[in-house]
Length: 232
Image (cartoon, rainbow, N blue to C red; front, side, top):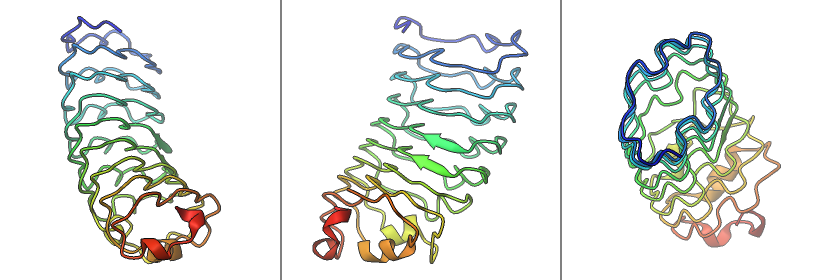
């Protein structure tokens, strides 16, 4: 909560070769305006950045390669939640194959407008994208098949509250079937600009067991009135 902190030395963590966890390290440093590209370059054992930059509203972008030297990284819970990010760079997690869950990683980033197509491409072990982009109220478009590289079981709350999201459902989830997904609850809740066919999506997730409020207030869907009440 060092609100007056405006910048970080690029070698700040250089002597911490055995650093494994960064939890709330720079949380609520609202004056911080940038993250050095080499901040984590000397932390090869880093496994968690949970809430590391939570509430850093002054941080508008992330350097490409921020996590390049952190091959053991597994946990990104709330890492950039409620920050000022407007776009995410390509290859952000390209060298982090051990990540299994993206939970609230960018939720509440109210200025975020751009997500690269390869964001999850290299995270083949990821099974859950829980509330990853919840309340990203400026987000309008999602790259086609963004989540196709992993064996996803849960998209719980993934775009909850993304009121401007307008990418057709069939583009966001563009495979014929997602047989491993069991949780879709709140995934598109209050996505009032979302287009496409909700019933088609329901048919793509035959194993789902948790689905309440998946499409609450998704009035622009072609078949909103035909959706089962239990899904909205």
